[in-house]
Length: 434
Image 1: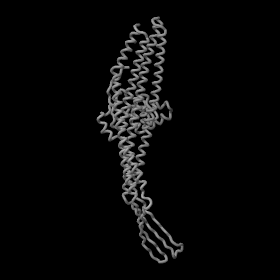
Image 2: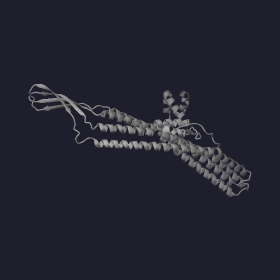
Image 3: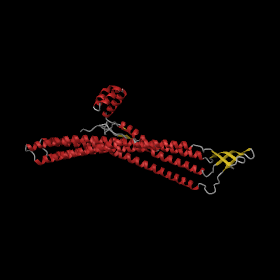
């Protein structure tokens, strides 16, 4: 399908040099790649594409994936057995009376040390995977917040441009009425000041849009964005019901990580307890006495005597760390429940604010502004009334966009807390009239 766009891709390539055009003509696959890149640059960025790019290119998520791989390597090492030892001893330098002893020794771990070590390493792997899942939810939520922040900023620029057009028409109308002698020149000055104020708002909106796009780039780990974002800030997310949160909290990445940390430290307690049992080293070898002209079998056993170091301090440390992890687990559960409830409350409040602004405030402000503008054209109202109505409409629209952004932030925070089950997105509100 991309081959249909290859001629267009070559046409664009001519702008960048003859060599690039020749390469595209010779290599069809390169033509497809160039056409694909051009289409991608032209097409607006969707939320799903932004999330997928963030999950693939975010450096923090890549680092979390490397942590999982490192933990898996530690798990392999934890299951390794002690290496045998080859020992060669030579007594006397004279060949006729020399005695040579060759022996092999093997340490046998007792008390379940290897099993406890493997258990702790497995829990560490699961913790790393849980942190990766938590980071995945965090990156996805961050990409969602950054995407809708940029989308809201994009809509704010559009609103500011529409407001500037209204202010420009009002300023022109005021100039004509001053020229006709129907109003005071002061009214024209106020109109021009109002237009300048809207221009400032447009500059601020464009600056906010640029900052939001840079933040989205950072979250995505990308170097460029399409000129437009495809989506509608009016597409509100739907979050889980409040009564379903307690069940979802149990599967939250942060709570799973805290639970796995308790299990890991419990395994470390078992490991430190097992270390109090000394390991046995078995030895078998051959002793060659040249003076006697015969070989002698050597068998031995080595057993440390736990007289001074009973590993009591390390065991006490492991016990207290496990106790601390259990308290942190309870604290994490309480924190998640509180933050999830707060996020749901913020979501409900913001949705109610959005609905009120959409259904009542903005339509009323629009009617008031249209009436004031029409009355001004008929000479029934002063331009100050038009400016007040216009300012009220602009403030209502700005408040509407802020409420929309808060809805998306609350839903993203809930998604970050609960993982992938926190929110879904669907169209719930119609677009307001510009």
